[in-house]
Length: 202
Image (cartoon, rainbow, N blue to C red):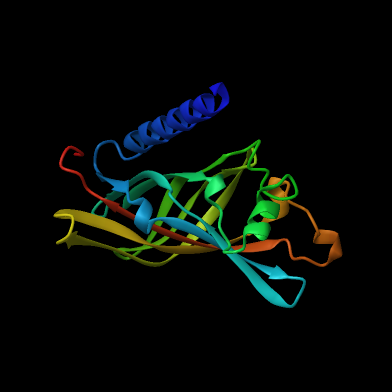
């Protein structure tokens, strides 16, 4: 019973640290949005030995988004529960969660923390940040395919978010299973983020 509690405490601590870094990153100039797990996910696509493409995703993500369009600044911190991995195939999920790939038992959480936002005019162009996976941290750049803010009639709050994509070399994080047998090392990621501005978030 103690081990899950410790993991939960670690996740809470990590999220608090990411939140604090985000609030410092824009020096109070940005509005803060709490990410909506229903509209925030990371999906992956990887070549299957030159035949088809395997796909899956990670869900129930949490974190914060900070956005200051006039100052052209932003921050995003995302906590990714690796156990949420789903491909729609139970046996495949189990293999991907094993030590052959994501080793979810030893590394139950991954994190992304942005370090810089790039703009093209008044539009978000890309977000550079650090991805921590399997205990290793490496920089990645997420290219925005769209980003927008609107007043949600359902939430009665301002909502900001967008779609991003990137391709990473999985071997940088130590995931090299089957690379010598023809399975590609590059993984395409599609990142969906959306957060709502809460009344108590200034």
